[in-house]
Image (spheres, rainbow, N blue to C red):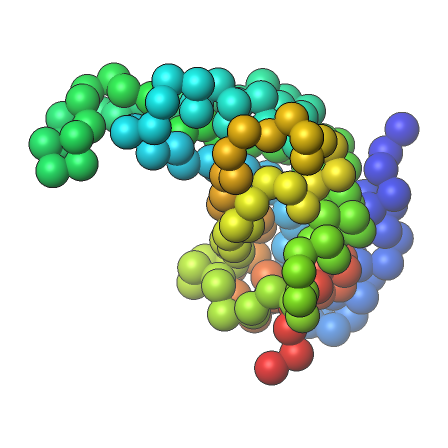
Length: 180
């Protein structure tokens, strides 16, 4: 069964974008291809930090994260080769739409003094990246069980060729941008 947001995309967003931008073919309409959730963990933290971040990311996304390791030694950062420095999850298909729906409907409104996300965080190729300062905004995380507050980066990757079209796509899908 397809998610509620996917049905909204196919039934409402695609026809609206096709009419607004005068696309001749339905395949010209931009779409969301993947969402990448990344948690960077300081290498100097205690050994359990990467395990705790991995556990939290598993609870948030429902997928097991990939542990990122350093590629070379950097003495000024006290970093050794093959040392664990973070974890990430890539979501596609139904899992992506479910996560997007939970993010917009339940998690982002839980941020203190939330007035929307900045529409200026696009990368020039239609991808949007924003940071969340702590993982406690997600309802899946139990506040009593967290040991340390950990932030994360969330990247929305689209097929839009430019930022204006990607902004229009995300707005149509209900992403909360600030009106500035």
